[in-house]
Every structure is written in C-alpha cells, then in structure tokens.
Image (cartoon, rainbow, N blue to C red; front, top):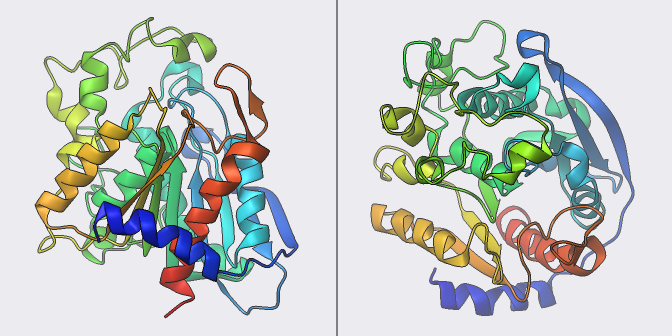
Amino acid sequence: MSLLVFLVAIPLALAQTEIAITSYDKASEVLWASPDGFDLTMDIYTPNNGQVSYPVIVMFHGGGWLINNQSIMDQSCDYLATHGNYVVCNVNYRLLGDMENSVTMDEIIEDAMGAILWVKHHISNYKGDPDRIIVTGDSAGGHLATVITLQGTQLNSGGFDKGPDGFHPSWLPKGKTCEEIALENGMEVQAAIISYGAFNLYEACKHGFESAGNIFWTLSNVEPRGIFGNEVNSTDHPEYYQKVSPYYQISNPTVLELPPMLFTVGDKDNTTTPTSIKSFIKKLNEAGYYDTLYWEHKNRPHAFLDSGSNPYLGIQFEKDAPPALDVMLAFLNGIFYEK
C-alpha cells in the first residue's frame, strides 16, 4: 500500500469504526523476570467486555534507553484498553544507567525479547491470545519493537559474550534454548506499530550519543559511556552497533516474513524526523516488504504519546495522544476484527 493511499484510508477507517468505551481489570507490577537480580515488571490491562480472549498489545516505553519507566505510557495503555478490544502489556526493561551504570544495549534488547516470550507463555491467564501479538513502542521503545519484529530469529545462547552473535532473551520458556526458539520462529509477532522509532544506533553513536552532549545521560544522573561498555566503540567495533540497529538488519521475505507494520511520527519531530522514518520504510520496501504504512501527526513534535504534559515540547496527553491512538486502533482493527 502506498503512503498516499494510507493517508486517505485511515480517516475512512476511523469514520467506519465505532469505538465502545469499556472498563478493564489491571494487574499491576507483574514480575516477569529478574536478570542478574534486577526485577522486571509489567502492568497488564484486560478489557471487561465479555470476550473470551483478545489480541495482545505489548508496549515498550521511550526515554533514550536512559530515562522513564512504564508509567510514562500509563495513559496510552489506559486509552487502548478502554477504546479497543485488546489486552495491553505495559513493560519495564533495564536502562543503560541501571545496575551501577553497567547495562549494555544488547541486554536492553534481551529484556524486550524476554518480555515477548513471557507474554506468549503466560498471557492466556489474562485472557490474551498468544497467537495474536502486537508489538509497539515509541522512540527508544520503537527501536525495541522494531528489533523484535526484524531480528526475532537472531538468538544465541551465548548472547554477546563472544561478540555480537545474537541475543539471549532475559526470560526463556523452561526446557527451551535460544536456538530452538529461533528455529521455531518463537518470537514472531502478528503486527507492529512503531511510533517515532530510532533505527540507526551506529550513526547515533558516531555522532555523540555516548558523550556528555547527549542530555539523557545528565537526566539519568549517570556518567556518559559506551553503550557496550568502555572497551567497545563504534570506530573499532562497528559490528556491535550495527547488530542493534534495525537499519542494518533488514533481510528479505524469503528469509523472514514480516507482519503488517504501521509507522507514526510527528511532522515537527526533530529527534526522530519524518525523513528518517520514511528512509527506513523505503529500505524495507526495497528489500521486498510492502505491508508498511505511514502516518504523520500534524503539528506535533516528539513524544506525543507520553502521559501527562511536557512544557518543553509543548505536548499534553489529552490533546496530542488520542488522534494517534485512534489511528493505531484503526490499523489493528483492520487486521484482527474486520476480516
């Protein structure tokens, strides 16, 4: 589907979609893993509208891999759970500054992958359908959702211990190895929504992400350092950075079939620009993936899905998030409820 057709089709889909408001049950701070003793939790929202089971949205928050936790997505998850027929999982993962500023980017990705596997093996207890998983996230969370979608078969029991050979999820089903999960395509998701995501950490780190010029280090109150520790850098070890950059990890449909993907971004976003999002979509299309949709949020900057308000960016949830969330729900309803 072309970008032009999508921009026309979304308003029509919204006009034809009747959104019913419903209540939900919320399981808060559900412990799903404790890598190296660091507890990871998620909040799980289950709608109360009588369905036996629901597709599942797994949400990863943004914050430059250095700040925030799942609470920054509380209002977005509440909106999705009350306006759509979906179980919603709002996930915490480790940040770079956690564990005395020792967490590496591959470990963050492994947390996100572990959350997907945990959801697939436990979400039926919350009326979720493990065969209908949607992965989503904004900014840094959009990066994690993209890695899961494109690189879910790049698993390795050794993780990055001997180099960037593959990821070892922070949670594995009992009796399964990383290689067995990869062979079974056990990380497969049925849809992905990427909101103003970051796709090229290699370039970002070449241009100062690991330095004091990146304000997120200051906001997280930790010293700037390499995202793989101080022994690895983007000049001498580009393979590490490219392994965690979806821009360099696009295969082709004969190797891996991708689900439908929706990309959203504010047209005033100076952090992950519309140009960068379109460039990534073009790369996907050139590789043979055409089930990619694009939507621009007019007159909005970065982080328009965040809870509360941000005076610096001039955004407020009630004003800025619902139009984007309605587009997301229209996209998902077209996949899961309008066949």
